[in-house]
Every structure is written in C-alpha cells, then in structure tokens.
Length: 183
Length: 197
Image (cartoon, rainbow over all chains, first blue to last red; front, side, top):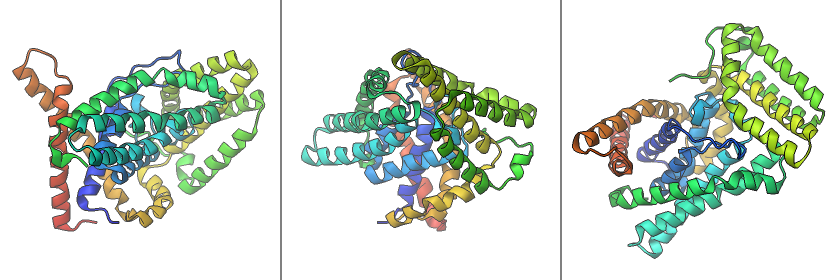
C-alpha cells in the first residue's frame, strides 16, 4: 500500500481546506458549553467523500500535525499543543474516525447503488460526520471537563442540527462534482 | 502564516524541545492526579508568571489565550450547576493550566524544532505505506495551499458577482473544489516529474 504523489498532494489540499474553513466566521453558542460550531467538520466530511477512507484519515492527521506544530489553523485562531489538552480534544480525535467512516461508507453505498450519489453521500456524511464523531467528542468532554454523561450529551446535542445541514451541503456538493473526483 | 511562535529568544527557547514536551506530558499526568482546587489555581498563577517573565510578547500571548475562555467558563458553569462549585473550580483550573503550559511550549519552540521532535512519533505510519521523511514537504504544501485556496475562492466569488445579482453561495463550491483538485493533481504531476521526495 503506497501513496502516490496524487494521494499526497490531495491530502495536503484537504488539510489546507480544513484550515481555511476554520476562517469562516463561527457561531458560538456559549450556553451550550460554548463548543464552537465550525465549518471545519464540513471539511472532514468532504475529505471522506472525495479522498476515500485511507487518504481522508491521513489528511485529517496531517492537519492535526500542522496544528501540533503551532499553526493557529483551528477555528477561532486556535492551534498549538494547548488544543490537545482542551475540552474539545475528543472532537479532534472524532474527526479521524469520522473521516474514515464517511469515506468507507460512501464507497460501500455507492457500490450498492451507483446512481444514488446524493443519497449515498448524505448517509455517509451523517453517519461519519455525526454518529462517529459525537461519541468520541462527548467522551472527551467527560474526561477533560469532568462532566457526567448526561450533561455532556446535552451540551453537545445542540450542535447536531448544524451538522445535519453540513452533511446535506457536502452530499449536494459531491453529487455535483465530476465523477472523476469521486473516490 | 502567523504561527504561535514568539521570535524573541528567552530562556525557555534555549531548553531543548524534547525536554519541554516531556515536562508537558509529566505536568499533564500530575495535573490529572491533583484534586485540590487551591493547588491547581496556584499552579495556574505560576504558569501565568512564566508568561510574564517573557516580557511583552509573553503577556500578549497570554492575552491571546482568552479565545478559550468562553468554552472553559461555560463548562465551569454547567459543572457548578450539575455537580458542585468545588468540582467546577478544579476542572476549570486544570483545563486552563494545561492549555497555558502547552501553549507555552508552542510559543517557545519553532515549527522546525517541533517537527524534528514530533516526526519520529509518526514513524509507525510507515507500516501503512506513509514515508515519514515526506512530512516536511507535506506540511509546507498545506501551509502554502491556505493562501492559494483563499485567493482562488475570492476570484470565483468575484466571477459570480460579475454574473449575478445574488450573493455567491453554495453554487460556487463544486466548481471551486473541482478546480482545486485539478490544481492539486497538476502539482502532483510536477512533483513526480522531478521525483521530489
């Protein structure tokens, strides 16, 4: 299993895309543990759908590596090692899993129903971008912030509507892309 | 790109990066084992003092950390509400302490140095076919792609405005992505042609 130059450059492209999406003005809901709603999970979903599971995980990993090096590329200009000790670290770990699940499920569904690109992409980004990310994110909240499961879930659930919309948009985008750019 | 790094050399800059990272790990384990609010608050003050010793740039960096305050304070309120105020003080102080210490390492270690220390940790990836010696060029690509992507988006938004009275929205994302993917593939071709590793 080798990475071609195309794989590598696309990985870098999506890592940069996730960084750029962090510049999109964010909406903070401070009453809900203030987890910033960022456009960045949107980048994670797109990476999964377009790059496929392996390259998408590598791309998110590369992004996190750049964060660890000290580049302020997370939404709100955050970055550096501090992020990995903050309450949202679980969500960052969730992105890795989410990108993998999203890419894997999209391939699977697309094989089963090749004409239903939108439906497959929507399913994949909802499962990968939400169902895979939240359990890890909430566990992070519980461990780092010492919240109990119930209040951690309540704090996180507020963001699910936004993520449902992000899934819809990514599915629509992928269904409008030329087929060569699909996994 | 602006990094968190403070370029003015201080005593912390002279400490080897691996020592700073190892101390950070030790501190995180220690902080998790302390359950006394007062001790953690004291440790926070010590961490803040470390920033202050670096002078003006250090204090600016410390002030820059206020972006995390809404999240952390909201968590504290939630915790004071469902558990107890003591518990809330402990976890807020613990999170702030770790963020301050970790950021201190980031702001006194250059990207190159950090790369040298972190890179070996990624060595297991070579089992998946990922050549770790390529990481530096990938990081450079990511950082270079950021302004390129922004410029490309702006030019496409401008083209939309020239054609339409409505504001540019999701409609320009698919062509934007197709264009950037094509551009990435061109870069890959030229890298392959030069056999860059």
